[in-house]
Image (cartoon, rainbow, N blue to C red):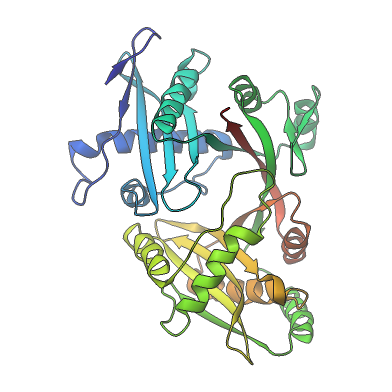
Length: 373
């Protein structure tokens, strides 16, 4: 535990969760960090649709051979006042650290966020990291509020497209801390169920352009016969999607890495639906899309990766895969009322697919980066 110059503030490393910790005192700090994040989601969005569950946290913060994950908890005079985290990639992007800082609403504007960020950055530097990255998502406000929010101007992304309002607290904090806005993502929400007539029409158009391809799918575990081809696509995902000026090295995926991710999700209580498009002649997987769902949060599905490999673009494969997965999700997850997705502002093709399916803007996310000299 480190005493802090902010009077009465202490910042403590959260113990790495171990199997069997769930109901013990050892997990108290993990639960405290979860409570701070839940309160933030409820205040900002009015729901926990974007939040992880405690079971997910128990699994995620154990880390893996691919990432070291660290959390810290701030207490002010004994009260839980904030949290920060540092994620350290171990296989690729080993010059980078992903940082998050969150101060509980009653304790903001007291310098706690600056101290949490200092702890996170010191931890990252101690692991030899020279690039710090973080993100902050904000909801789309009603027109009147949104207009007033931008009265003081907008900060454009340095290397991507789009921008964020200058007078947001998150914008001011990032700029004051030496971070630059590299990319902006749009978050969108699709109400479920989707009109079957719309899906039929879009699917018929996609099929007309997708001769020589067929859709295959699975739930939670990729078939052994496809896992090597699936790993190739997972690697392409790290290289083919727009990342603007963010540090993003090519990730090496193989079958063991796919299985590691699947098993981690299962231990964390997360299930997935995958729709992939296979080239009939070669058997090569050309595209895939993933939806994740949590029985503890049955109302919302999260859109994870979607990718069409470069050589196979122009055949409506992204639309074909997404429609197949939406249809399957409506069968497997009948309680789900929506899907949430995120897309880089410059990813016009994928945004167009989502708009055609009925996704509506829900928020925007600033992707920030700080490079040490």
